[in-house]
Image 1: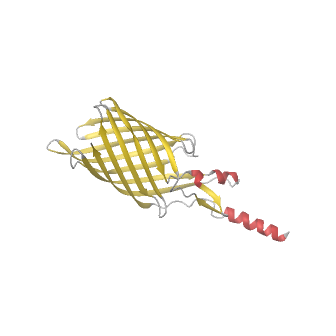
Image 2: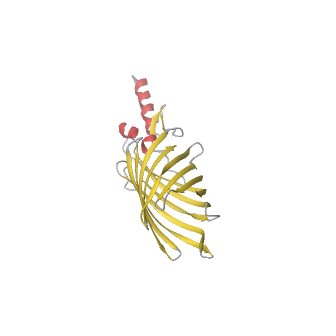
Image 3: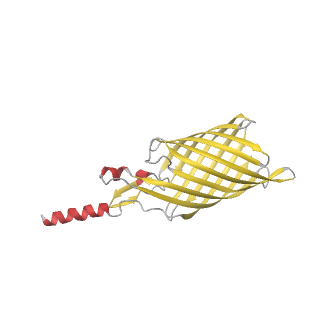
Length: 244
């Protein structure tokens, strides 16, 4: 009897010990973005985008995004896209396995995401002010979210033509049917795009992400209360845009 009580005590202690995801440190990660744009008509443009990032020592995120944008006004475009993503991590990926708490390995897990987008841009002198509103539905877990991304771009001109774009954007990731936070993630995007030619435009950029982990399903099922942890990451990356 005493032995059973002792084993029960050890089991409950192991469940409680380290049961909350550690607060993420602000790590510096690498990122690569490749984009191909093709203009079918003055109003219709296609996009193929490959996105790769090193999130942690053993975790990577990668995705392929396909779709079209349609210009409904000189300053307004609407878009519809499909994205196949690997390596994404969600709140419920914090699970109890093999007598310990850990994150699911999601490197090989594919998720299908439908994206609807509306963007507004307006040129004032050398500045472009823009706002992008994005709706996403993830078929893997039926998560719905809205992303709001205002920003500004400064055009460095050479003989009247754009030579370098300097941009700064903020993005708020708003969960609609998941998470215990009203803002799931916040992003800052900064960088430059070099107009090597009308076809080839390479760039470099810096991203900062601040997000929040909240109680996973496994955690709630064990009646361990609630948790909320912050995780932050820095990204240094390169991009290549092809217009053809």
